[in-house]
Length: 368
Length: 168
Image (tube, each protein chain N blue to C red):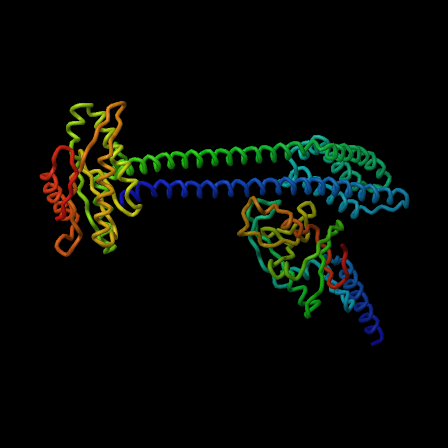
């Protein structure tokens, strides 16, 4: 029993464990994929923010320079401060890890040289004593940067750097799908393998319990079933049935014919008893019938008559009509006969007494 | 005696003029404003550095290496200008960037106004001279770029305003 539990349930537990592991793996992958998606979205937001802020700082620097020119008032400190803000916002756009790499590459390509020039130019101009006269030169450089910034905005609006993210998302989803399919396949295969093993096990076990010719329980199973009934403390009556004239059938129409006769007898007797009774073939032409909760002794007489009549009915074997009789020994579970072996032995000895009374294929029964 | 008085007056005048010039040259680095009672406290960089400073050693989204940041925790300024707490608080940068910090956020994370990195003053091109940061130790390196975190870190900090209405 313990071995059978191990055989059946250990693989099932293993499958469940594998399944749990795979579910955990998928969940982890799913979370990672979600994290990647949200990071990509954040990167897009940061990219828009950075390019917008760069444009804003550029406009502020330009406005300060223009203010200086139109009002004829130099404000070198503020210009220097605005330039610093612009440079920091450019650094953010060009190097921060949050910014889309494609946009970053484009920004560096488009702005870097002009930013460096502007930085140098402003430094030179502001160092000059009459710096205000050269403010216009700074405006020229700012103009170039504004044109570069416009190209960056177009680059973003055209969605060039989105392609990387959308492909990334698609790849993530695709690989997640493949993982789910694989897991489903693996679990299905494992379950199929387990089901086959389980069914084979059940089949083997069932086969080990039945008589393959008559499909009745065999001796081993019969003993198990009687033991179970004995545990219920029910009154049991045992019929030990041996066929009379069966050897002649085997000798005349062959063993195959004999087997057919056994099958027919088994079927007839099975149909003559109640579902709670146990009917088994224990070898050759010997059968055991256990009547559970059999009632009064007169009821036993009725049953034994009915079975005897069923057995001795003629059997048509492809034109050959054959007949068999039966010798039945009957014993009862009691204080003295309290084991299966004793029940069988007493019924067996009664059967021999009945057998001694036989004449031809006649049917007789004897009580122990 | 009269001559001495004149000399003394002249001396005091010169000293006062010198002091005034000196005061005028001290630029306000940071101001804290409470709109509820119209009070403003300004700090020069020297005054900020004179406050009891603390130190955080952390990575930041734009500086992956661990660096030591010196500054003053924000709740110290709040206690200074609004001891009874506040409804809303904004930190605004010189480049007009502004963030709203809720009481919960400030309670959850200790924000610091820093003025030195590894003992050195912070240049404008290093996002200084004042920055608002918080300790990011304990956050996975791959997560420190999350916008929820980054959005509240401010460069070029200029003012902190309390109970001045929403700017959203």
